Length: 546
Image 1 (spheres, rainbow, N blue to C red):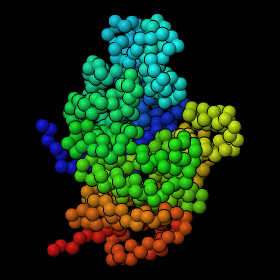
Image 2 (image 1 turned 60 degrees about the vertical axis):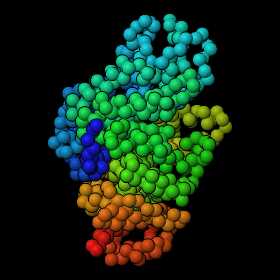
Image 3 (image 1 turned 90 degrees about the vertical axis):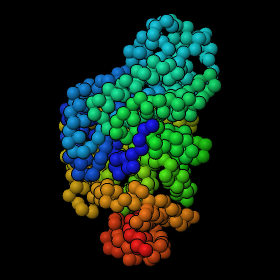
Image 4 (image 1 turned 120 degrees about the vertical axis):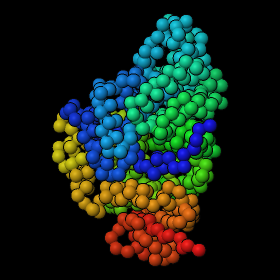
C-alpha cells in the first residue's frame, strides 16, 4: 500500500498558468515561445510562484489551439524545440519552480501517427486505438453531437466506418477500453516524468471512459478504474501535482478525484462557481447579474465538503475565461481595489491557488473596435450565428466584450514599450491598449500595486499554516455585499472580509477582531466596520493557550 504523505508540497504551493502563445516572444515572430518563458522565470520567482502550468506546446496542427496533439513527445516548432523544453525544466528547477505539462488524453489529432495507421485498415494494430462503428454513409450510429458543433461521428469511406469525436472532427477520441492505448499513454507520461516535469494538468479527463452507444460522455462507469490505474502506473512513481479538468465534477466525485491517499489526482478543476453569471439554461453569451449570495454558498459548499476528504483548486481566471476584474470587479473606477479584493477572497480559502498570466497585474478585458481584430474561433462563430438569428451588431459585441476567450489571450503586458514588451514583431493578436497604464514594469516598482498584493498573498500561504490547514466557515451568508469567512486551525484563526460591491457596506464583524493582526489590506489606513467600495482584509489571531 502506498504510504501517505503528511503534507504534500502542492498544498502550500501557488501555481501560475501560462498561455505560451501570449506570454513572451523571444524571436520577433509575434508568437510567445519557450525561450521567452525562460527569460521571465526570475519574474515568476519574485512573485513567489512554486509551479507553472503551461497550456499545450506539443506538435499540433493547431486546429484547437494545441489541444489537438499530433506528437506527445515533441515540441511544436512554433514554441521551440525539445531541447528548449529541457532547458526550461532545468532553469525553473534552479529557482525552485516546477513545470506542469498540459496533457490531452481523451483524444489526439487526426494527424497523430496512431490515427494515420488506424485508417489504413481494420486489421491494423492501431485501428482499435480509436472508437469506430460500422455503418452506412449518411446514417450516423446515433444522434450524438460534438461539442464544437455537428455530429459526433465522421465517415471514413475506405473503411466503411465512422469514428467518434467529442470535439473537432480533427480530434478523434481514443479508445481507453484498449489496454494497449493505456500502456502507450502511461509510457509517455513516464517519459516526461523522467525529463523532470513536476506535474500534469489533464484536459477533459472525465470524458475518457465514454460509452457512445449509451450516449455516455463524461463520468463513464470505468472512469475511476482508469484513473486509479493511471495513477498507480505513473503519478505515484514521482512527487507530482496533478489536476484534472472535470466539468462534470461535483463535491461527491471530487472526493474520489482528490482522495488524500493519492489514488487518483491531487485535485480537480470544477466550474460550478464560474457559470453563475449567465442566464439559466442559456449559453455563456447570455449575460446575467452575478447571484452573489448563491455564489458564496457554492464556494462555501466546496470548501466545507472537501475539508479533510479532498482538496480544492482555487481559480477565477484561465485561458478560456474573461478577465475576472472586468467580470466580477470594476475595471473602470476601482480596478486596483477590486482586483486585490478578488485575490484576497480566493487566496484566503483552502486549496491550491492558480494565478493566470496578467491576473497579478489586474489585466482587463479588451474591447477591439470590430470583429476583424478577434482570433478565437468560438468568438468568430458566435458573431456570425447571432447576426443570422437577428441580434444587432451592438448586442453581439457586448457579449463578446464580456465573455470572449480572447480577453484572456491578449499578450502579457510587460512594459510601456511597443507591443507591451511582448514582441519586437507584429503580435499574433493585438495588445490591449491599456498596457501603457497596466504593465509589470510599473507595478513591480509600486509597493501599492496589484502585483505587490499578489506577491504578499503568495508569501502569506507559506508563513501561516491556517491558510493550508484551517477549517472554513462562511459568515454573513445572506448579506448581498459582504463576502466574509473564517479559517480555523489548531493554533490560529483568520478572518477574511470583503466588500464585493462599489458601495460602502456595513460589516460589524470587524469590530470583534480589532485587537487581531492585520495580514493584508487593500486600502491605506485602518479598516472600520463600514467597508469602502471593494475593500478587503485578512486578519489573524492566535488562539490563547489553556
